[in-house]
Length: 128
Image (cartoon, rainbow, N blue to C red; front, side, top):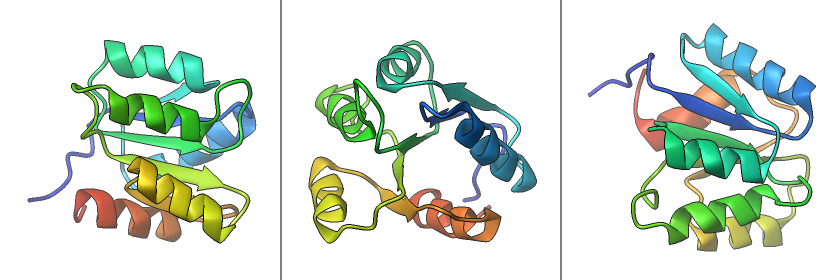
């Protein structure tokens, strides 16, 4: 089974430039339906209103962090299976463990490129 390149993907980061960078990387990888959200609250509203195939979220955001968003998504019966990749500038082991315990599917440390992103996505979604 291969991944549908038209599936909707949500990129969440309070730094607009980072949203654009990840959107561009996803386009390089062939994805055509990529949306952005400027923070955890906006992202959760979008997630509840739409059927995303994947969420890629920054960890460090205020007031709702990517971790808090992940916990809310996993606590929702309809959303708990949604593939979720966390992005962070910090590679602290305790953060990785905390995110794994909360149900994150994969973890990317900034900076990263298209091949790295694809590798993480293949682990979560399968080949594309």
